[in-house]
Length: 81
Image (cartoon, rainbow, N blue to C red; front, top):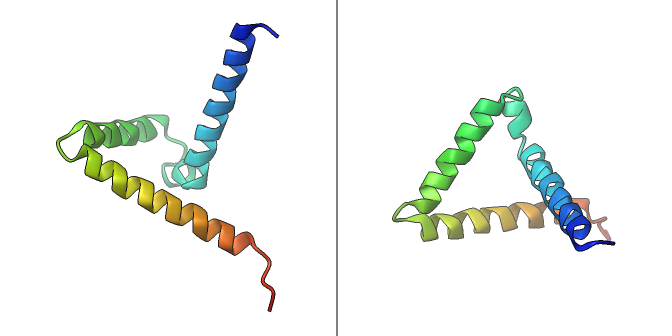
């Protein structure tokens, strides 16, 4: 497979995964699939990350995301009791 094909597949996979996160966060339903609203929300987050407290915001976003992933994993695990 050519290098450009590999890169294109990797990029496609990344975009699909990012779209999955948008859906997982219920943003599609919460905005009634309004692309302008979603884009505006992403621009707001990007501005926050570029601001003077961007590093701190990233830490908080990451922590919240990790907790959500962990909670989802715990919910999906079958209980032994």
